[in-house]
Image (cartoon, rainbow, N blue to C red; front, side):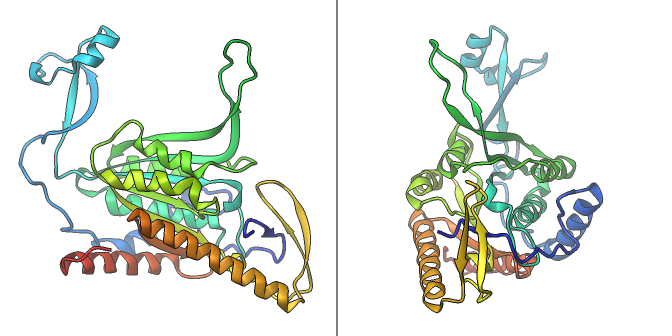
Length: 331
């Protein structure tokens, strides 16, 4: 229902993440994020024990001087090359992002496109989590599809295009992740949000923070179970990106609208008050179902709009989360 995107009025593009997404624009965004968010998460967590820690990390090839007690025998047997298992200190936080960049995100009637809000949220999260040796990675899904490998002469099925950005520490690497997300091309078609979220569970990762950024327009039964599964091991934050025209229609007469994921074009008579009322009721029910599914999954829920100050909304959300933790409550 709310996937239909109005082709008019034109979108206003202030200084921010523009379609060109130049380095200068991303640098200004980083400066904006730094000024408002710096220091919000200081002291939120601490290492339980000194030393390298005991959480299993990734494997790498054996080097002279490595502790043989850390040999990763399964990987060594598969590759016939000696490998050791790295361990991650408990004080380090690993954050993974599932970023939905399907075609429905290329729409906006407020100050920002929904895609621009997604990129801005990624930049803010990268700034908040990269300090102290923390690592951040992402899986980015688009609406595009690619043919799978051909087997036994059968017609290969189409599989979603997913870009995986490995988790790394350091501000330079975090900025590179933001640039990679901003430069991702949106393909036609609909992305499978459930499959994208499920990629954060494969392979199993150490406990950390998982963030799902999407407009969540896919049916809740598609992504609800993967989010609940993700919540078993990780703290989950769901960032829902919303445009005001997805909540109600203006009275502007005949309005041509197009579904950006299918290309279907329709003309809607917005002068009909009954149609506008039904649209608003259906949109409210849709958003309530999204919130209900996220609440049932145990995920924290942050809604960002294209017509408001998204950064101020993030600041308020982080402050509320910190206040809840200091009072010994959970959200």
